[in-house]
Image (cartoon, rainbow, N blue to C red; front, top):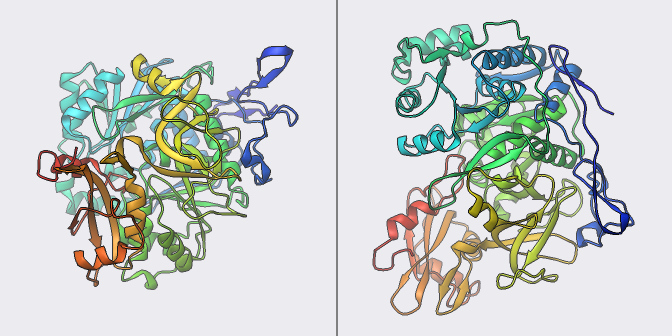
Length: 597
């Protein structure tokens, strides 16, 4: 039995349970292992990496357990670094306990929703852990949301408290929301106080325009006021399998965002699954670079929570900036760098990349979008590291599959199911499980699958059927259990009844040496109904014409798959984490001749 002790002496222990099945047998819950004799003959078990062990027990613990364990085992190790400021695990543990007490003083109890509208700073970590220790539920908020989106999210979540920064890009929106929602308190974090003393003074003197004018208000308080206590928070009994740790909002390409309810067990399970995959990690010695925002589920789990599992240092960047990123890698020497393909592409194509030593990086996990093979190869050649492509969703906390860090790493594949995770390819017509090599919807069962969507019973029923999550992605599985994503179901292009997958078209275009980025969508066509349109960004210093590209694609795509329309652009729209976004392009093209459907 593992026993963890919090900074104020509170102990938490993992329960072990079984779920009854027919014939008097038991099927392991997310806290136990599959019995080798009872486990089905899944194809990925033929050569599953022994260090990951698909059958091994996955503990059921509160989402803060890994952090408390790191505080206990590595109190003097660095925990967080931010623009020259740093804090040890003991220091962060003490501040997190004080944050928990502060939240409880404000009335936070089990189930109270606390919205975090923050960039990557130590404030996010303290507010996240403090909320969970107090028994509350973290509501992750994108700081760049428009007023309407922010209002919807705060109202939908029923948040009582909102934590934000005193930045001009954030605070005014948060203050406005305080007036038009049922929020009870706005907590404001000082950017100047987050920096080392000399930098803080310079920032306040020369970057005043980036700071908001924060006036005194009985409905708001500063973060340091929240911490003004002894940290003697009251222990809250957590049922990891039922209690919600995080509301992770996900909206796709249409409609208002909806909250995936991630339980403590969901979050902890996925953290353990991912951490088990990193087989050569050295506990207490790794350095994680956080260039992706923590409010996004990828960085929350794969960067922040996995770093806690290893007692690692988290080197935080408030946002991704190419030059700052290169400087940070060269100076701070991170060993693990989870990122999205566009970040790897930007580094590969930087004219200054040879000026920086990037060889400290041992492992990069790529997610968020398809990783072009050439991008992977080039980044590995520059750094000498291993880049593995994975796949996940907000609804799965988020990781479902990842390529092994050693052994077979199949190009174009999202890899093998995570430990304890079952992936099935199901028919788009009748939901039956398909065979090896057949194309259908990727469906998932596992301990990381969400409880459901908050206050959305119909939408929950549409995606969660008999405990199986229907992802909306089209994929295949080979005879070794490696999974390949073909495309999103909703992104498929129907041209005269022929299904065209934009991802396949994008991969073919990406093979041209002059192409840096490409996005393909379906647009209206007077004869076919729909046809592919490609939006392309050409590499700096190179040229490419439409005629040259069409000639290049002749032996790579069928005539109906080749883009009917091609448009070259200086920039392509991206999400905040750098994932290429089709949403804006579809909106632009809607209603045009050759416009998107």
